[in-house]
Image 1 (tube, rainbow, N blue to C red):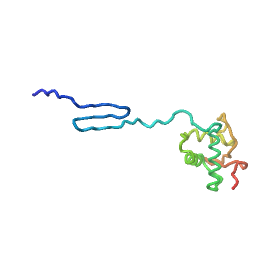
Image 2: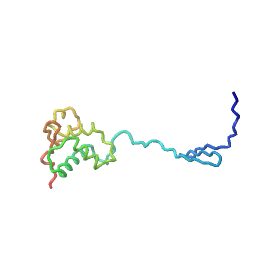
Image 3: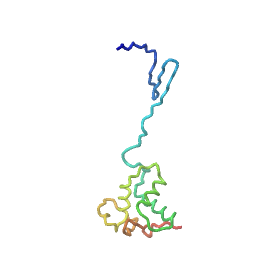
Image 4: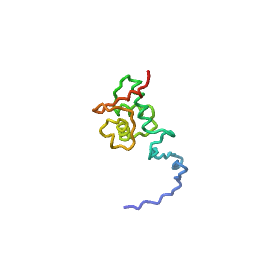
Length: 137
């Protein structure tokens, strides 16, 4: 068995900022290093004075105005809110909780500390806007 002969290393490997540079003889390879896209964590960032309840009501008014139907589900409103504000990271469970706590006749309404009187719960996941909150066409 033969021993490997030592190789001379005139090649260069360097890192400059976020670029890896590899030079081998007359050849050169440059690789840009990028980390994963970082989403801001933590709380939902809304405008000053705006709450998730405001987004829920806005989505409900938009749904009624756009589709002309007075009955909707929490999922209908969630999809409208995501279309209108795609930059927001709205968690589905938080959204559903805010919709339920906006309907005083919903069986789970009493479990929430923040309440609104925006909707009537119609049963089987269906809601309607309170008459005074329906947008005028």
